[in-house]
Amino acid sequence: MAKKRVHEIAKAEGLSSKELLTVLKAAGVEAKAAASSVEEADAARAIAAARGNGTPAAAPAQAAPAKAETAVKPAANPAPQAAPARQQANAPAAEAAAQAPQAAAGSAPQSQAKAGGPKASTKPVRPAGSPGGGGGGGGGAKKRRVVIDSQAARRDQMGGPPPQRPPRRRGGRRRRPLLEEPPAKPDTPVEPEATKVNSGATVREVGEALGLAPAEVIKKLMMMGEMATLTQTLTDDSIKAIADEYDRKIEIVRAADEEPQEPEFDDADEDLVERPPVVTIMGHVDHGKTSLLDAIRETEVAAGEAGGITQHIGAYQVHHGEKTITFLDTPGHAAFTAMRARGAKVTDVVVVVVAADDGVMPQTKEAIDHARAADVPMLIAVNKIDKEGANPEKVKTELASEGITPEDWGGDTLFCEVSAKTHQGLDELLESILLVTELEELEANPDAPASGNVIESQLDPGRGPVVTVLVQRGTLGVGDSLVAGPQWGRVRAMHDFKGEVVEAAVPGMPVEVLGFDGVADAGEFVQAVENDRRARQLAQERADRLQREALARRNARKVSLDEVFARAQAGDIKELNIVLKADVAGSLEALQDELAKVPQERVAINIIHSQTGGINESDVMLASASDAIIIGFNVRPL
Image 1 (tube, one colour):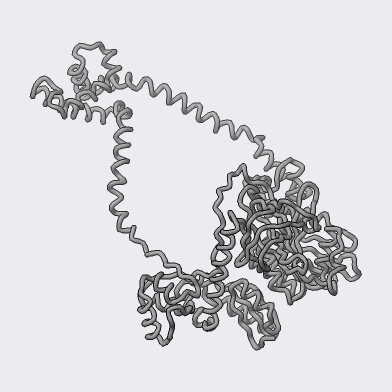
Image 2 (spheres, rainbow, N blue to C red):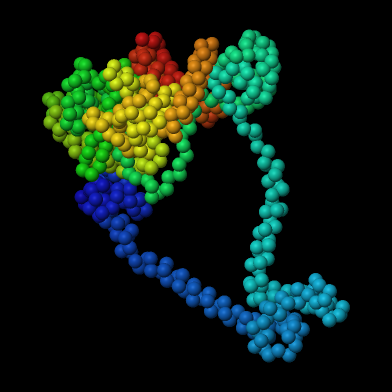
């Protein structure tokens, strides 16, 4: 039987790929992604079952509730009639039940006794606790006995209690929490929350945070062999040491790690709209990344760049049918590894470009490691298939050894064979990007306060600071007050990637913003605030924090492996990222095997990048972006 891809069957049946994947999973048909291939017959059976062709199996499920209803309804009405029949069958119960209606209604007809049976049993209960309920003392005693007997009779009959049990159950449920709450009180004393202390705080600020006099803090520092003044900034280690002396739990808050004060906004489902996916193109130098993007955009960008190598990150938008895709063109040269790592943090999909005539190269592996570290879906674009000596199968084999298995080999990674020169396979590449992002359900609220990230920034001699912002939420307009780290400004003008003036930028749209007071750092979070005064205040606070942290780092010593081990023992580290370098491939494999044998009950070891050769700046940048340590065997820094 012929096989078809999931998205092709979904398109033919008028379903989304995600819906069809759910249907196939429920039917037991294995399909990992929208590009997976399945048997047409299996898919047809799964769709038919989901659409209700298996109605014989569903009919009893609908008929069962109807039967249950018909059985319950008659049982609710004859219940009072069934009680006398049971009373006649049980003589003691009948006598007890007969005394109650006689005391309450005298010589009432049997029909009235049947209808008022439950009421007659409840009436004596009310006067039982009141002195005026009965005619005399003896009558009151008899009524109490009748109540007790009637309760016993009702327990045996199981007919009268149902109308009276719900109030008793409600009363029981109200009382049980009162009885269960006291045991929960001993659990309420939880560990006190950690006191937040800013990194680079002064002696005075540390004392205020811990509730200590500054003189006491200075005294402790002197006892530890450190001299400090009232306004001197302290290192993070010194702050932790003081807190440990007083058995205080603290949390060091750094300006770079602190989340910006983004305005809270509850997005309703009806307010969310689909936003374009953000795609980052990565790969080895001269493998045709910019040429491929140039072929997609049909503009001449690569020709105007020095040496044909991308010198900055560009953001562009491409229309494919009714969809829009935003591309980030990260540099491919090793000197721009930090910029490429930044691009992976704001992207939804990574397209790794590999030349068909060159194969997998060192920077190709780095791009794959960056995408994995950012937990971003990946696509492989095998470029230059029109050249002589192109061997796409060799590329697949080399990538399979790196853990990237093609979809047609049973994996879950899409491979697209393209040519930037002849434009071959470009439509398939764009279609594959949309397939991968369809399952992510990328949505944003255009009516929320604008926020996004800085993609790049530069100081233009004629226009001043120019900041490229990728809007991810809300709508950015001219006149909005923005803050990005220690920089702030008011939007004076905005231009799209074509250089055209725009008045508003919606989610997923990259724009050049004019109006910042300085060049913002790439990767900074950008948010719109209510006015310029608030923006200036937030930027100044952030600048002061960064300055104090820089002063504190001057006296701070580097983190050693002993401190990493101590943090792991304390439970502060759950996963240890490692960048592994060795002189030869044999040593590298031996190190990987030995690290895999290390017990990982407390801390999981994750090798994010391994390669032969010396430790270079690219390795340091990757380790810094991933909070990793670098282990080198028989190598030295380059």
